[in-house]
Image (cartoon, rainbow, N blue to C red; front, side, top):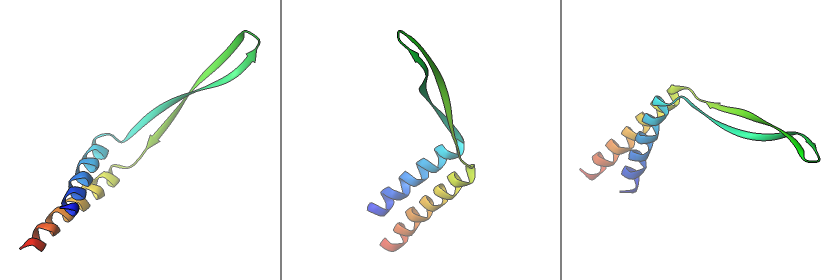
Length: 73
């Protein structure tokens, strides 16, 4: 059961990674701090990956699911 669960999770993550190739997160950095005056800058941090990574994860998950079924027979 453990191998099948890991395989299903890998397939789900792989499909999500194929559909969404990147995401961004934003941080705020303080540029100037002079008494009551503050100037902040929002910095965008993109994280990008290849859809091939998603394909490999989904394929590996399918292999785990199918290999577990063959072991039971």
